[in-house]
Length: 231
Length: 258
Ligand SMILES: Nc1ncnc2c1ncn2[C@@H]1O[C@H](COP(=O)(O)OP(=O)(O)O)[C@@H](O)[C@H]1O
Ligand SMILES: [Mg+2]
Image 1: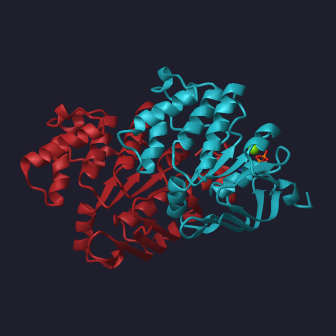
Image 2: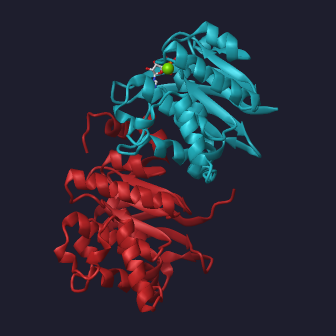
Image 3: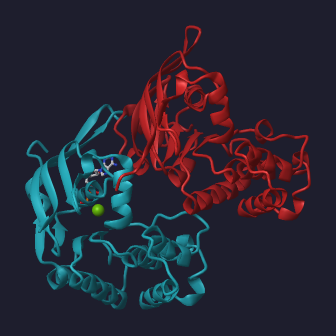
């Protein structure tokens, strides 16, 4: 069953205050993604992989085209009311950005709890579940009550993952989720991604490591073919 | 999912003499949404907010409201009496200067009770308990319920004003630079408080600010204003991370510090 559909999607950036420079990034994207697929986005650095994910999350606006998300009905995320996108993000699409972005002073454990609260899934078992996940991701207990903003890059990335992986999303967008992790933590995260796939979650992931791609992904989308020819 | 539209604004325009206050404003506000209005000083943010909250009568345009009771109403053609009653009970306005929103001649508890009395709650112990509850919720010391506003610091006065407004569960809260007059460290703490309250209770809010950090922190969607008109609107993170209009790009790059 298709869960994501891009129709004639184009993305350019117009830098109005830099002499109106136009960056044509992606052109004529037409594709479908089915429930349960694990898609690897590939292409050289700067080609537009993060831009692609951000458009799927409604964080970047396509310059033209439709991005349809199918849950119970069809929602074109490129042209929807704000509260519809917010609702989709709450219950349906989770996004792990390349860098952690959280409010200052909020403790790690609350950041992770908040996802469940937003999904109305927080109950008396939740704290145990959250602590288990944080421990599995090797976030020490002594850090749970601290804001992650002072943590190392790898620790921040794992908190970022915990924040989204704790939730019950149908689609996960992962931007280089293992980039700053050591081998041990990498394989832990890969196992977590695999268990999401077993639950039929649809995943779109940017990952440079060929071995990881072969291990988890069912298909590659090479953005090379969407480079506008006038570049 | 069917969220109720509680405000529909069409072509709202206000002139001060020949001078544009705001012009051709259109937007919809849905229940539970937090709308930010950003722009430089003089861009028309406060004028727009005052038109929306009924403090000034706009020169032209339309505001339809649909509250919990009473169906859709044309706000601007309501009788003055009814408009004032709405503003007293169903609207909540948090002013930049807490002294504009507090009654300085009565106690902290009295200020909160005064507002609740407008929505017809008359039981003394209920009023007192609610007062204490909201003082706690806004991180004030509930034992200071009998003190007068002027005995509190500026930050605490702002917390008191927020308690006063939110305790009566208004259907729309309007805030104009709610942390504008305060020290940076106090600002951050008050924003934390507002954030935790809006996460707890499903308030609908319109907040005016020139501070993009506040906007990112608190709001769901944005109107970006320049010279009285809205130049860009959309989901907050979309507007800030992928701004389309040249002015929004200027605002979000560090070139223009508003
Ligand atoms: N918000 C933005 N404004 C302007 N240009 C952007 C923005 N985001 C990305 N770009 C540009 O889009 C292109 C693709 O970037 P990106 O999606 O980050 O590539 P990748 O993730 O494949 O490395 C780059 O030229 C980048 O500079
Ligand atoms: Mg990238």
